[in-house]
Length: 317
Length: 292
Image (cartoon, rainbow over all chains, first blue to last red; front, top):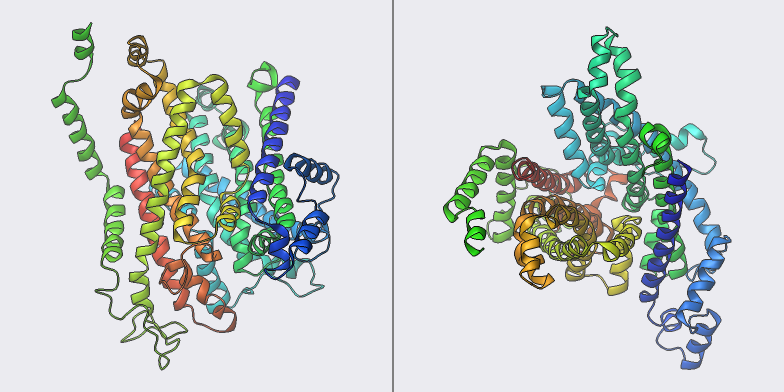
């Protein structure tokens, strides 16, 4: 198993390196002539050259990449071109905000959708199954801001149960924060529910049809015990993988949701940075999103291998 | 040799019979029919534009600002006094233009990538696969926003960028299908005949993996609408004053903070929802018939 983990880890590092190259290359395309963009069309050519020199963008590309990435891994994200303060001091709190929102969505979506998938599988082919599958598929495919609008109209505007904006008053306590984050996280839950429920349902059905489940039933174990001890343990393996890949969506989907709810998260930061061509901010923001996603995938792979006896004992990959 | 090769191929009438059977199966699928009815309804409005809408979707009327749904304006009016119903109907055009074209680019690019990876295998496959993995570590919308800022945003760059982002995703699916074909006899036979790789990939293998490509393409069309809607909402897609659905939502959602003007965003939202759900129903039907 350690060989398996080592290999996974190695692959993650390679992917991470490629990701950093892609992000760097993309943000090279972005600013055009950086100094000209920042200083405007009337600045003298000398000033532009001086600005470019001060920001190091007149050096060879490989050099610039190395400077950026070596600073990045040491936690130095550079200066924001737009705000003239360090990127880290802006991205840090935003990342925390985004993680709060993502965590709440996560805490809500995982039990709901696993329950949905399990119920659908146990009622396979019947009306309950069709309803869960069709509703899940529909919710998943509708853009998150559309679902969010519907939720806002119902719970915020008509019933007035929940606040319409996500930004809480400064100094708000834990529960007030959660109250403000409920509507945005509902929208994320709606998008993710379908995926996770569908995979759980498929995993459950496969496990229910397996010989060991039949054996367990035939040797007279009560149904609940068969489901919890034997079926669920195996059925949830693919679900874990899907949940991890969906965290990538969770962080990216925040871009739209954070704008809709006017919430200062990392998605909002990336959006504003992209609009203002603040490429140091954009680079770091995008890189952090990729980092979060890759770590989630890695954790999922490790969990998967710990839970899956075929990998735990086999050493295969 | 030549005789045995032709004998192995199903005869022409057999092939068309199989195709007829597929079509009949599709027509029996309720979800497929329901999805098509909804999509055809929106295609009708996309083609006719503002010709049959009750009002001009762009005409502003300062005397009738933010009127609730009622006689005269069934879906109410927006903050410029424009008729929401007419805008929702005419708004079909932008979505139905951008998303299918973007998907088409993605399918063409993805098919090429998938054929190359699956056919050559080895280092080519491994290398391209790593790069695609790195790409997919970023959420689609983040890549698209970055790219759109770099190349400038308009309807056409949106189409190209989404198509480009979809290519590696579709490429993966096509690759998996090609891997299943590569070892089959007809490919070996073509190699022995001395055919060039492009010929084998596009003339020999491609027709045999069309099924999965169609299914993947339809599924992607749903995602394309999703992505186009999100990016337009952020301001990177279709530009005002077009009556695009997402644009209507981003124009008016700030009103919800102040008061109950929910009809300005609810109806365009339902329109988007109806199209994506319909496309997914079609994809579901296709999947059940073609992916056996």
